[in-house]
Length: 190
Image (tube, rainbow, N blue to C red; front, side, top):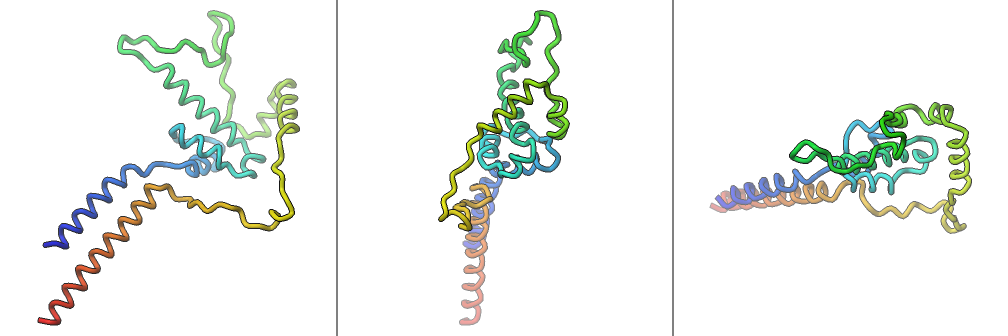
């Protein structure tokens, strides 16, 4: 009877932890680097985590930093223009800034196109700003001791809730194995 209680407690703990296992910054990066389009909506924490962990090659050769930042900004704007109960909207900022009253807002940038097409369609001012930003970008300082050294990334790619879930599964399996072995030992002695 006791092993049933242990198994039941393990299942309850697994169900409680399983619902908190959400996407991570790695999921956002994978979603973006697939086709330079985010197919899902993520939390602000996941967007921040993705921007912090964006690999250098995806940052340099892709458009993911801009896509993630726009998606992050879009979720903030959606929250700022939520509907009230009476149907009116909160927040007054238009997506394109000021503009002429009565004129349609400017179209949003098309972040689904590859970076090379977006650069070709950009204005001269935008190209100059991009060139200046690339020129001003600070390169990380690398010492001779760092060359050839393994990166200092001791963290796991698995989110914490998944690690907890795996630990609970292991503990439950060990508890059931102990109960089973004890039962076998008792039957042999009898």
